[in-house]
Length: 241
Image 1 (cartoon, one colour):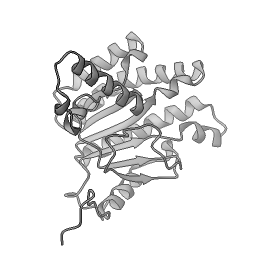
Image 2: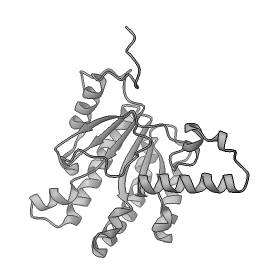
Image 3: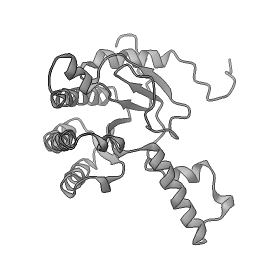
């Protein structure tokens, strides 16, 4: 923490929270216990980012592919999500955290969606950290959906072909009101994106940690931030001395 330049922190951090199940397996515990301990890391890292005055934190919470897991595990994840939302609203208010969701919410139950909408409404006036959960999310599905939406606009003569540029494309993505991540952290030892923010991560800095998500703590976050601050970000251009 003492080595960090607080004036050069990333504007937006995205995290692939991987390793809950393997953490539990390594301790001969049920996978559900791994997910519960993963929630503790979410709380810790979110509050740490709020303290550091990070503007945006996006957490890859549940992918569309995760719905192919055994129904018992998916049901357990939904139950954990429901209880966590209810318990965290007051803490988000105390920490001035604004809560939001992006994903294909039609995959979620009406009960979960109502609870999510309530949390969004209760924190909408907060002005600190913007905490986004990527829930029922798939980047390829997001991009495919964007193509369909733009194609429909063209067919209805509401959009001209020459109007389509990168800015226009971004208007049809689920993250249209969220800046691209500056830093993407993945825990769990795998070095891949796993269908997360493929468009948005074009110039994102990646940081991979071998730690399972339940073991990822504030010190690990500071190490990732220190590593980020020592990168040379040129965005495809030559560095100007």
